[in-house]
Length: 128
Image (cartoon, rainbow, N blue to C red):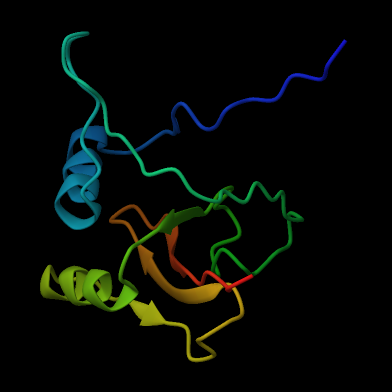
């Protein structure tokens, strides 16, 4: 029997102190449509592209200083420069990785209003 593989993420579900406010932040700052309230409305669609699925050790500092955070979102962006500009214009503190560029692209970090880390990634496509 041929091994089956999932086709991609169908959703990301997590607890929030104020789900409505957090959904509004993600829509305003990152353009992620909120969950539809009916089955006739389309949910957020993402562009096809690379996705890294990487469990980290419980003691990692990669997600930031708060060891209680169990996940970090990594969001692909078309233009890191423009996304950083947009986030900062909305009053968000964004840290652009000082070691940019990496062989696989450009990175920056922002935290949502509940302190969840979000890594922004502009992939670098190396010519073959």
